[in-house]
Image (cartoon, rainbow, N blue to C red; front, side):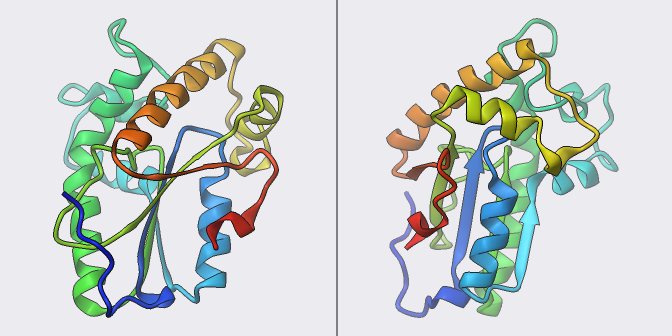
Length: 190
């Protein structure tokens, strides 16, 4: 169960979750929201994942050491991403609780922000799931400038597309706002 918005929440003290598969402009939207709402703190789940590697070895948590769209031991990519995301949730929740207790806003974005998994009952949050309806636009975005040293193959891209469909269902089931970012409509956050 997720709490309703508290009267103490202003734009600059909101907790905002931005989930979505690879290549859907989560970081760009987080940057836009932080400026628009005058929010100081942004946290990307990819950086949390890198820090978690200090505590979890590749042997103990192999999915943590893969791209979100790779597979481990033949499992579906969605299962790999969920397995990668589970150990990160307590860290995300701690960040959310700290921001809430200090009365400061926080945007948490990334592939590891997953509807139905990244749910916390004692901190009100605005929850968005971003996706790209247009396959062509998505392929250009996933191989765009924001990840210059990453090339996503067609096989990997189609895994991402399949995960996106799975997570749209999860977002609907868990009451997340779903935004198609194909058109780059930043104003959809109003």
